Length: 83
Image 1 (cartoon, rainbow, N blue to C red):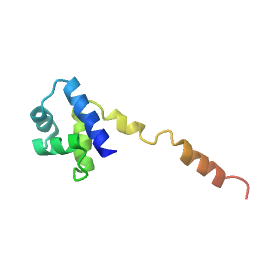
Image 2: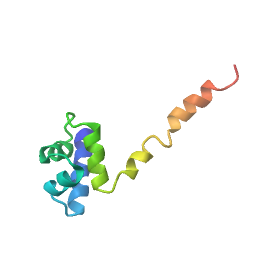
Image 3: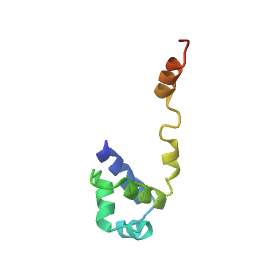
Image 4: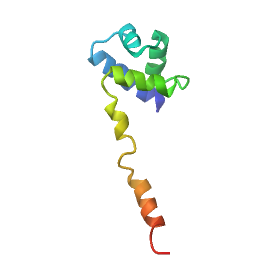
């Protein structure tokens, strides 16, 4: 899953015609950190992923995570049913 995520980060960067160095500078991280994100390295911190998302203009995607948690809502509704 992380590898696939990293590939999507790389594609987003390339579509925007940004170099690794430019993303690193704008995110305030090292170039090696950008490489880790794009490789899906589990050693990259969540903060690093979020910084890169922001540079790519994709920080709004984080807001969509679990926003419509259908399974969770169903489980909650079942738990709230009649005693």
